[in-house]
Image (cartoon, rainbow, N blue to C red; front, side, top):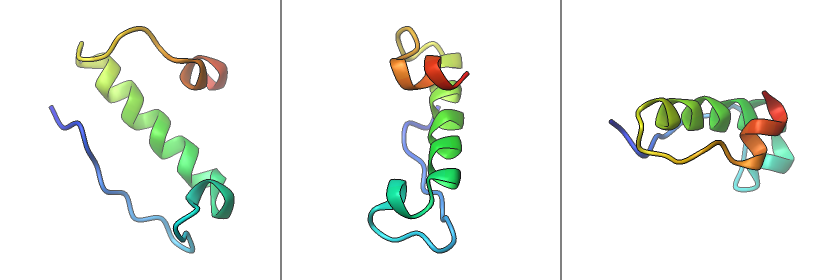
Length: 52
């Protein structure tokens, strides 16, 4: 199970959430679902629950 991931997002600089939130949040949600599905994480956090 991977617990880190590098995702290259076009036109995104250091402040990814401000530059490309349309790409940043889906990438984070996918990663959190993968970790949660592996049994290595606790219950879904507020970000994952709110956007589901």
